[in-house]
Length: 273
Image (cartoon, rainbow, N blue to C red):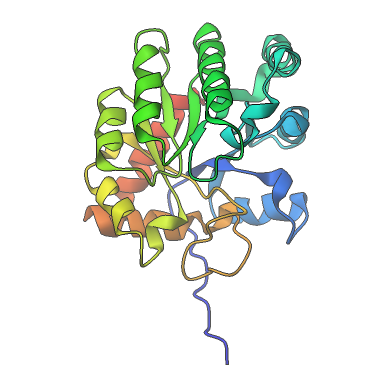
């Protein structure tokens, strides 16, 4: 007999989902996912661009749903696809007053030397050029970094003074050195369902040293579903489990996590309260 799953709680305070991929979710329709998410007091959501083919799609999604926002950028896996044509496409969308109303960041950008689906030099070029775009447009960045701590820090040091809005290192699984560097540089750290995994003590260690005012909540759905729903497709409505686990690890009240994470999201992405 399968284990009975705990009902998803409806928390008293609003939550902002800072990182998910609505275009990749398949278990329910987009309308059903958004409707179910709203029932759990998730007030706003950011659907993330990853490749040349969904730059326009995430904008269309954000335009369709009042409470959904989006980003523009290429994931490091797609670094080999970064070229002048793609760059021009991103810039066109950012500069289009009809399209940029719901764009809140440049991302998901960064470095991934674990899979190395794109050559390192091409990842680095795409990362640096997209950081410059964010700086030029006064936008924060959403950064993916895996097995690339040293290079991520080296690149970000070069943009320390030009990237005014900073951003978030999302789905944080890196070492404590990168965590401390990011915090010192005024970046937020994004935590998701990994925080509930039994073998993720390194992530909980990073969370322990992260100030409340630097924590963001995310699911990265459809990936990284938190306990007790591992094995199911992830979705923003599982955020309450992540918030509860973060409160437990930080040894503070759930209210403190929700208040701080909400305000951090508003401050970083310039949402109106």
